Image (cartoon, rainbow, N blue to C red):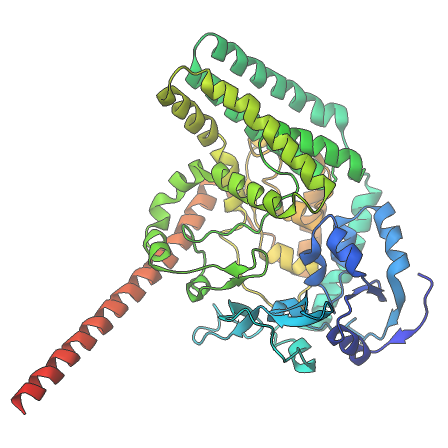
Length: 512
């Protein structure tokens, strides 16, 4: 990687505090220019959350060989590592610090959020976890982050073991490559899927022409349900492995046919309808959306019922994806040509889909068509939720390795191979999270190697059956709902006590 200076951890920290974006990759220090931070296809947050950290496994997992070779030009030297590897720093953004343009035109530090330290159960709130709440004032502060800001909180994880996991993961990745699992099975994998898309599109069109609107809506929804798997693959560069070609195909499928922006890979905000941990009761700050996720009375009411309305919400989850997509494009439409292409695709989608709704004959029929076609896609949303809601949401700090974090927070959904097409192969979420660019049709073969890796490293490989997974998720939602109800009862009791105290004080005052 050209440059040879050796950087100490303190020197790296000092440069970060001076405003530089420094990331460690294969023991090299990468200085990311602001121009690339803004242009990064994966978004700036993906880089900002690894400032001061070793991102080797993440970069290798998400980027192809050609892209990784381009990383060399950002190297400014090597870093001084301990026997367990690089000792991570806490990225400033994780503590609420970001860089903004000040009144002088220069970039300055701004604290958009402050650290929230909840009291109570260490199982729910481990000391390694950094939670943020928003700032009440939007005025630039005179203070800046310090060395203590970059110091990681206490973690129960052993750095040596995490380094061992990381090293073993690299060997696993090599086995995956050597087994040829990055080769896309175009004929045997995507061949049957293209035929399925065409069949569903034809059936939907035929039914619509003959006035069988519900049948047409079901077939259209099933086509969307299946198409999203290919759009997902293309979004992860898992088909042709060429970013430009995969992106163009993804825009055609997702934006033009599906009405969703392929550029938006949202950090899905569940509030006000769902909360999978009592942690969300604190109205936390989202560094993704740059706003507070308010836990108010409205949210408390729905969360107290979340285990009862789960499937109802999932039936309309596609509308939430619309909201995420259009919000994203609104923010990005004038920033990049890629986003403007997405806007064009969505205009085209609503032209053809709007014409279908208009042709239904009445607003009641159009509304039925809209609801049915979207509700049919709900199994996809349920499946994705099963792979995540039942698993840990705790932050174990920057010392946690990439493979340990992915396997701790993700589970597979067990299903017969013959029914795998319903889940699109993404029921194997553990392997997908470890190797996001891997062609979806090769996940089953790769999962065998991942299970061997997990057994060797002593890491749990979680997997549930579809029914058991649903029960697990509903159990998590019910547990949180009951805690909301308990908080409500305590608040009511305290309010009644306060009222009674005031009445008592007034009565005593009159008697005096």
